[in-house]
Length: 91
Image (spheres, rainbow, N blue to C red):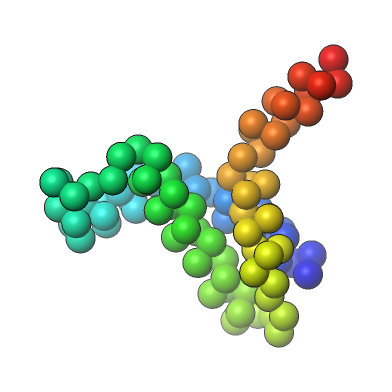
């Protein structure tokens, strides 16, 4: 269970690093006229990273919780925003 959170968090944090590669793959698959906007490309990169994390976890673990996978990925992807919100509240 903890392994799921850690791997998903790392996958979420790595989303900006793979966004360019995912955009290139989408461009070759969809073409210029059907390309999603910047937000859609970020979501596609996030989904690709969570899929990679899920495959890795299935290979090394017996139990993989999809809920923990999404929670960990979301925390990893939005860690900067979460830290900023917490620090604003703390003072």
